[in-house]
Length: 84
Image (cartoon, rainbow, N blue to C red; front, side):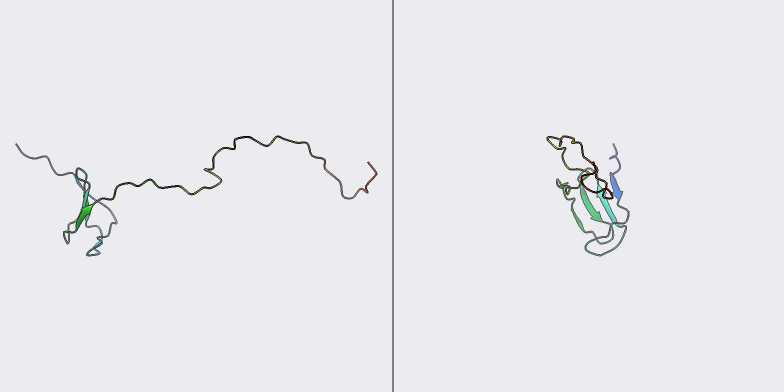
């Protein structure tokens, strides 16, 4: 019986931290190990950490209570006071 082919994929644009060669990093999808095919550098891929998204007006939580609507009175500055 022959072994199934390794599940290694090249990472486009990745630069090796040791030899600075571009496009030489492969990732083994079974072991999550990244390796440079040029110099032999290898390390475990970092685990996904939970990133905290900065608060913006787009992702802020919904207000608990909305401000009630109020009627406003528009004042014409060209009219003198008391002519109402």
